[in-house]
Length: 534
Image 1: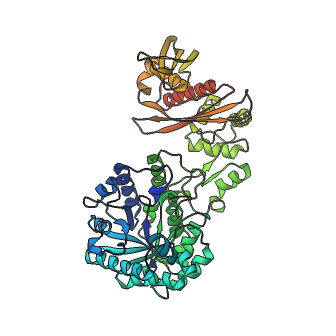
Image 2 (image 1 turned 180 degrees about the vertical axis):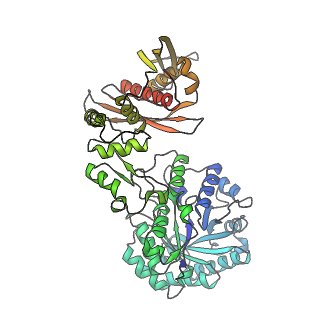
Image 3 (image 1 turned 90 degrees about the vertical axis):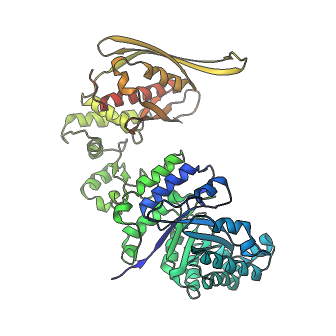
C-alpha cells in the first residue's frame, strides 16, 4: 500500500531563536543547519533576511544544505505599497533561498488594530506577495498567524486569507496556533473544515506549546488532512515553546498509526541520529539537556525500581514503547537506593565491568550504594564515581596518589591598580604512588576553580595524562537546611584530546570538601581509563 508523504519544516533558527536566553551566532546557525539537514528534514527556516546582520549574512551565499530546502522568512507587503516598492519584502526576495515563507494576519481583529488597515487590503497584499515569490522562481508559503483564533472570531475572513494565498500560487498554507491556546479537538475540526477550501496536500500546521498540546495538536492536524508539520528541535520557541520535532519525528516513524499511512524524508538510519542532534543543540546553547524529554532524554529509557529493572532486562519491549537505539538513545538501569542486584549487574555491564551475578561482592556494593545514598550521594548522574566505587570494592582501582592536605584562601584586597578585588588561592599537598611528594599552589576564579587548578598543576609522572583535562560544569545542591546543611556537588569534566566527558559526585557538610572529593574522583577516573600504573 502506498503511503502519503508528510513534509517536515524546522523553525529552530527563526522561531526558536525567540526563546528566552537563546542567541544564535552565524557559526551556530550553520552548525545547526547541518544537523537538521543530516536528519533529513524537508525545510530549514534560516531566519529573516534584512532583519539583522547575522540573518542577512546567512542568506548572502548559496545554500550548503544537501537534503533540506533553505527557507527565508519575511512579511507580506505593507498596505499602501506595491510588492516592488516594499523594502522588507524585497530583502526577503533577494535572499539566496530555495523557498520563502511570509507571515500574514489571519485574525481580522489584528488587521484592524495592529495593522490599521482593512481586511480587503490585507488580502490583496497576501496575493501580491505570493505572486512575487512565485515570479522569483522560489517555493511560496504563507504562515497564517493566529489562524485558529481568527477562525473562531471570523471564519469567513480566515478562510479567505488561506484561499487567496493558495489561488495565488502558494505551495503551502500554514495554519498557526500562535498563542498556543487551541486544543486538539478544535484543531482537528478546524483543519478538516479548511481542507474543503484548500487541499490538505497544501496545508501545514504550526503550533505553540502554551497548553502542553503542541505535539498533540500537530498530530491532530495530520489526522484531519494537513501534510506539512512545522516545529523546532527540542521544542524551542517563545513563551512555552513550539511543537517539538524531537517528539513528532519518531512518533511519525515508529508508531504504526502513522508509519503505516505516511512517509517522510527521515529514514530509520537518519532517525538514529536524533538524540545526538538534540544534545548537540543543547551544547551549542550551553544548557543542560532535559533529562525526561521523550525519546531523546537521558531518562527516557531509564528505570530505577528493582522489580521493573529485572523484568526490563528479560523483556524490554514490555517497558519500552520503542527501542531506544531507534532514536540513538540507550537503556539505562539506574543505581539508586531502590536498586536490586539486577540494576547493578546491568549498570556494571554498561560500564564495561564484568562480574558474576553470584559474586558476594555485589551484595557489599549494593549495601554501600544504599548507605552512601542515605548520606546524600547520587550516582544516577555520576557514572564515573559509581565506576570507581564499584572497582574499589572489586579491588581494581590503584592508589595513584594520596592527598595529605589542602588549603583554600579567599581574600578581598586591593590590586596593583588600587581596585578592590576578591582573590582565591589554593594549595594541595599530595604523595604520588611510590612516595614522591608534590605540593602545588594556584589561584583561580573562585575557591573551587583554584582547588582544581592546584590539584591538576603537578601530579608528577601522571601529569602528561591529565594535561588536556578541564572542569566544564559544576552543580551544587543543598540537601538539608540550616547552617549545617549537607551539600552535594556534581562535577563534569572533559578531556579535550578525546572529547570524552564524565561526572563525579562529592558530599559533605562543607561545600569545599564536597567539591574536592568530586575533583579527586575526576582525576582518578581519568588515570584509570588511561591505564596508568601505580
